[in-house]
Each structure stands twice: as C-alpha cells, then as structure tokens.
Length: 224
Length: 224
Image (tube, rainbow over all chains, first blue to last red; front, side):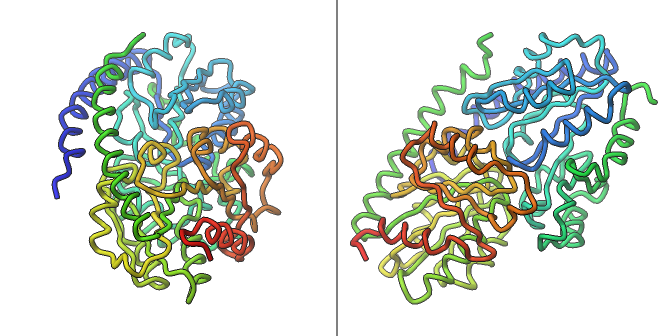
C-alpha cells in the first residue's frame, strides 16, 4: 500500500520546489523594489480569468498601469485578447505544463518595461490544483471560481481557498439560470479560510468590478 | 534559457510514467479478461462529470451494470452523490494529487465485485491537463467540455482532444444565455482530431443522453 510511484516522486518534488522558491523570492524582491503589485490569478479552465482581466484592463484605462503575463499550454488566444487593452502582455507557453513556475515569470519579465508597471497580473494556467503549489513571487493570490462550476468547488479545492488573499465568484449574471447555493459556498469558504473576502463579479456585465478594483487599490504598493 | 528545474524533472517523470504504464497494462488486461468496458472521464472542475454520471447511472438502471471510481482531492461529495444511483462506488482521495494514476485504480478495484460490472466509469480529478498523461488501463477516454467554459477550450487543450475517443459538450441547455461559437469549437476539434465524435449533452435536461448511451453500447465488450 506504499506505491513506488509516490515514493520516488517525493525527493525530486522537494528539489523542484526549493529551486522554484529561490527564484520566486528573487521575483518578489524585484517587485517590491519597483513598487509593483504582482497578482497570481488562479482558476479553472473557463472560469473567466481572461474575461475578468479584459474588463479590468478596460476599467484601469488611464489609472494604474498594468502588465499581464498569461500562461497557456499552446495557443496565443488569451494574449491576443488582452493585447487589445494593454500594450505589455507576454504569453508564456507551458507546453504540457499544468502550472506556471517562478523561472517562467522571471524570464518573461525580460520582455516587459517594468519601469511603467503598477499592477502585474499573472494569469496562471487554467487549473485549480497544481498552480497553488508554485510560488511565483506574487504579493497576492486571487482565486477565481465561477457560478457555472457548481457550489461545491471551494470545498473541493481547499489548498487554493486556504492560500488565497481574495476569492472572486464570477458569472453571477447567470444565477437565474442555475442552481447554486451561495450560502453553502460561503460556508465552505469560511471553514477553510475565515479571513478571505469573497466578491461576486460578472466580467460580462461589469457587476462587482468596482469592489475588485478597490481591493486592488488598497493592496497597491505606495497607496492610492 | 534551459532552466534547471525542467532538466531535473525529466528523468524522474519518465520513471514515474514507466511504472504507471506497467500497472495500467495490468489493469487493462484484467478489464479485457472480464469483458468490462473501462471509461476514463476527463474534464475541468465543474464541467459536469458527476452530474453526467448521475444521469447515466439513472438511465442504465436495469441494463448494463455500472461501477464508478471517482477521484477527488479531499471530499467525498461526488461519491455520496453517485451512491444514490449505484451500489459500487469507490471514492479515491488524491490529497494534493492533480490526476489519478494506475496504481490508485488497481487498489480501488479491490473494493469492487468485478464479476457484476459491465461499465467501469472512472471519474478523473477535475483537470484538463495532467490526467491526460496517465494511462489508467481504460478502453476509452472521454473528454467532457461544457458550454460555460467558452468555445476556445478544445484549442487550448490539444492533448486531451487528440487522445479522446469521444468528446461530450455538456450544459447545452444554457446555450440561449451564453455566447458560444459551436461551429468554431467543432472546427478546432477537427484540426486536432478529425475522427473523434462530438456529442452535445445536458446532464440537467437529459438532452443527448441517448446518443451517449448508444455510443457506450457500441463500445461495450461482448456487444449488445
């Protein structure tokens, strides 16, 4: 009952994570030195990460200066969507990689003029599990769930909920068409992380975007 | 530009996959000997894997005899839902593991009376990436997308589309409330896998379930 696959995985994972953490710490020091708020955005495929960022970039226009790193297996689709709203977007192709790692962020930073960035949004690969284990050097971790995924998703992804500084619940415009227990979802979150705020948003209608932008502003290095 | 993290990962992954493939082959031989159709069901969190299986188990009542293995990080919620419709359900808790592996399936089979199983549904962990790389010994791989995830998800998950024997597009009852390019989705699928059938289904309304059950029946070992 102690499968060999598991046994040989452990030492390597520890080495990988140690290497990752070292680079993440360097990224974090760089962000702090430059007063950049780095946001690691984690959510399932199709939860609306890119749509939320599109709406966010549009709303920021003329205010805080954004840059975006966006991780995906193969396509450039998300990057292409985001470039309409932001002149500093770097697409990171992970191949078969199911999460971003700190060295990929570090390498992508070389393609960005950091002297004109206030918010660095890092859209992680669509996955609720693996990205949680890899620190990228972010100041804050934002977990994005969507109503259409069902009300059990917080309980089923405890590591994300525990490590998140903010949870966003997207696609609230679809509530009339779904069966979703909002109170049950909130109760599951509270059990795992009593402190984390949960904001309802709709990237489609813009509902809740003000609260999300205000939250970012409060976290911004250097204040308003 | 050849990050050390990647370099040290490769040899181990090869060993892990080799060990996994050996056990998967043993599982597959066992399924074939017993004329069990094993189905590896892969989809994102909240795409409706469990809801589809609930509807499937209900529809099979009195026909082909099902058993279900269901993988999840921590909770028993999916298993509890499925046990209402099937007396042979085993929940596999993967902890922080983002996919099922063949040894977990092998161990779970010890809790099932295989002499009364025609269909073995294996509900993988909610994840469109990692489960694809781990053979479990299944006869068929079924990829489940849902309309609410957006029409770009086939293009963004080429490895699943390429390896799938069937794709199901769930939540078609929500089409009137969404912007989803059905033809574009189909075109992306065709580029990656010209042969794979795509069936529209709704686990909620039951639409498309007949076609899904007929597909299973045609694949069933021993015929109808």
